[in-house]
Every structure is written in C-alpha cells, then in structure tokens.
Image 1 (spheres, rainbow, N blue to C red):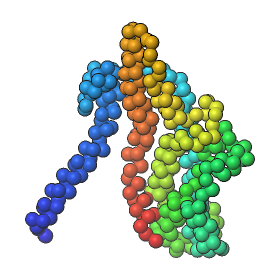
Image 2 (cartoon, rainbow, N blue to C red; image 1 turned 120 degrees about the vertical axis):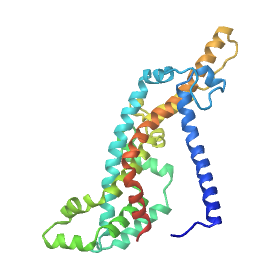
Image 3 (cartoon, rainbow, N blue to C red; image 1 turned 180 degrees about the vertical axis):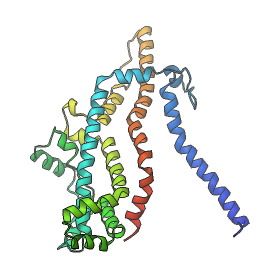
Image 4 (tube, helix red, strand yellow; image 1 turned 45 degrees about the horizontal axis):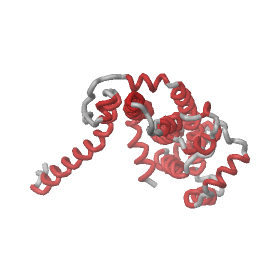
Length: 297
C-alpha cells in the first residue's frame, strides 16, 4: 500500500481547507436567506440577522401566499415547465437518435447545418418578428416553442447514443423485425434513463427560471410565469416619494419597507424550493449522464 508523502499530506490539507471555505461560501447565502425570511422584519432591516432567525415569524410567507398573482404565476410556471420540458425532450431525443444512426443519409450535412445555429443567431428583433408572424405572441406557445431544443444538448444525447448503446444490439433487433420506431421506444429509451434525467433537469430548471421570453412576448397578466410576478413585486416594493409625510406615515412606510425586505427573501425560497426538492431524486443519474455524453466520442 502506498504511503502518503509529506507533500501529499500538505496538498490534501490545503485542498480540504479550500473545499471547506468554498462550501461555506456557497451555503451561507442560502442559510442567511432562509433565516431572514422567518425573522422579525425590523431586525432584518437593521442588519441584526446574520445566521440564526431573530424574532421568529412566518408573517412574510403569509403575506406572500395571500398575494393571488403568486399562485397564478406558480400554476403557469409549472405548466410551462412540464409542457416545455416534454417538447424539449421529444425534439432533443428524436433528433439526437437520428443523428447517431450511421444509416441516416446526409447525416453530416444535417449536423453541419445544426452546428451553424450554435455560432450564428438572427438576434432579438428578427426572432420577435418570426414569433409575431406565427401568431404566438401573448400565447402559452411563445414560452415553449422558441426554445424548443438546444443544439449542445442534442450533441450530448447523440454522443450518449453512439457510445452507450451497442450498434450490434440495434442490428439484432432489426434482424428480428423491429422497426426504427419500436427500436427507439422499446430499446433505446429504456437504456437512456441517465441522459433523459439529465436533459429533463436542464430543461426543467431553464423553464422554471425563464422570464425573458415572458417579458418580451406576454402582456396578459394571467399568462405571466412566477419569475415575472416576482420581478414585478421587487420593482413594486422600491422606495416611493417619502417627502411631505407625517411621522405616523413615515413609520408605516418604514414598516412596509421592512416587510417587503423579508418578503423578498421568502420569495427566493418559494421560487427555488421545487427545484431543490426535485434535484436529489435525479442526482444519481446526473453525473453518469453528463460524463458519458460529454467525454466519450
């Protein structure tokens, strides 16, 4: 058994110390936001909360959940995430599988055309004009169709299919009379759970955090996603004109400002919680899927 030298021990000690510092730097903002969201608004506003809650209260969360647009945004975002992820996976997996097949006529030409989209983009205004001409503005489809697939994810899935699913398995299935569609559905997809989970997580988080498309294409508040509702709340809570206010009015305004501050922290937790809950269930597929799809080939 090899013994660690003095340099190895020093390196490991320094490396572990750096990793601990990075872990603390990553975890502290989350812990602080969580503590501030359940603390007394005044103590948060005065900067007395550092790590643990002070003046424990759920008033901030109560105010958040009493705000009806929050629930509308949640409903819309869940719908956009589920529908958008389903469309993304369908296009990505089918396209990647076709490009992974050696018998696809013109495969290299298609690949070159797809790669061009990674380097050249029409820009915001041409994209908006296309979406408008298609009649997608102010509809749910403007949130899921413009970003229906990402070429980089297609490349990762294609590499996964080429390196992880033996061509002999596909050929033997075809000899037994299996069609391409049945081969894809019955053999390829069941063997591709790691990459499907990874792509689902990537696309799902992307849709959950999306607000830019809504900002451009949507004007109907009933279609706003959660992130756009949160953006409006943050803008709405900015300090307004406080001149010529009486003392009581000033005190009331300051209390509202403090309450708005802890609501912001609560909104961060509320908007991030579904993703934080979903990630542990997909973690076991995450590293395997990304490494196989990105390194081999």
